[in-house]
Length: 534
Image 1 (cartoon, rainbow, N blue to C red):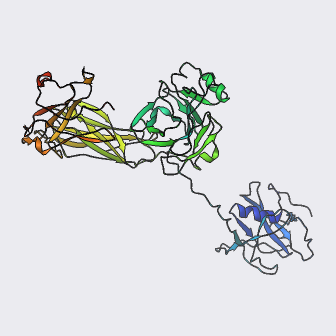
Image 2 (image 1 turned 90 degrees about the vertical axis):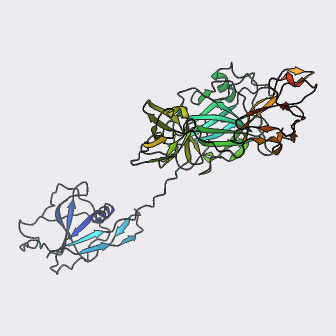
Image 3 (image 1 turned 45 degrees about the vertical axis):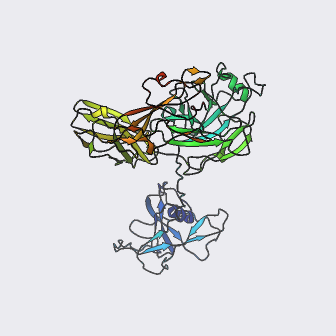
């Protein structure tokens, strides 16, 4: 007797069952042989190929601590270990028995599968296939989709002057920090930073070609009269940062942050004007502090970022984990995306033509253009984003003299491009008749003129009758609103009638009084005070 040599690796029997179960394979368990042994397959090194069967002795006296190594005796060819002739295998459909999973506390803390329906040694049972039950699939967490690729994570709105010690005066080291929350490098050429002071909006341009890598931050240093002559090394020295932090400076000198007044900073898509993200500061009891960072977080689905703190130590180029979303802004390649575009079936000569469009492209639309084609050629016009819709106003000159034109809309999200179908529009041969809520239009004002006696002497406003009938001006009033009060400007001449498509110049009475012929083509005068200088 000797050990049977195989090309496969001998492994413990229990381990064989376990490893097969983990791989989702089946274990072939043959009927016990006449000598009390059990035929068990010998596996190849990769556990995927059965090389041959070997017989494992089955005995009540077996050592329970036995490692289970497969050791067999070689039998003469064509006979089993008891000398009996071997019968060919029956090709009936084998019985499938599922292996239940149980937890076994052993020194290796492994899962053990129990093999059932093994026939007794005296049975002439057919071979069976016992299939290991697959392990439970791990629960997959849904990926969080972030709605914006860029976040404003920090600003420093109040700093020292260029000498790095004087706290009063013009701040020299203000900055806004941007973070790339997407899964790819972002070209900031597609975006624009804007400073909002009430209704006044100022663009903060940065150098063209600036790239921001995924998961990285950028410190945008505000250029003003105090910082204009400073070098990047001065900025790094003031904040104690090394060359690993990406820093750019606005290309033009701008009015920077406010130390106390409420302000907002936003990032928009340059081509469409869509707001990507926005922060507001100094909007409560807390205000900007000298060389302290104001930090902001992220709220899913909202462009307005929440303010987290006003008194942090500045960390230009480094965003904290609590400021960032759990997921990433991602845009993948898609097929079959569409663009829907619409406008009136007919255009009027002399009037602009409005086109609206929408798309099912995912993510932000970085570019949206309308291409208008006439017999004379094609021209492109940018579309603006507002409340989920893209619009474009095509000037009348684009189709002047044409009997018709076609247009299509093209949109791009940085990865995919979608194009609408071509739409045909006829051009009416009659000029349009614009509709207004009232026939009178204010078409011009002159609020600042040469002085007489210390006051502007020649202020006026112009009124135009856009209707097709004459208008009695006694039926209308003129009001001046300076923001804090409203005053009526009463015409001196009563019963004035303004004919259709005629213009009236209203001269503002001021002191000292001037003769009517002092203003060219005076039609009437008012008895109201002059226009405010506010």
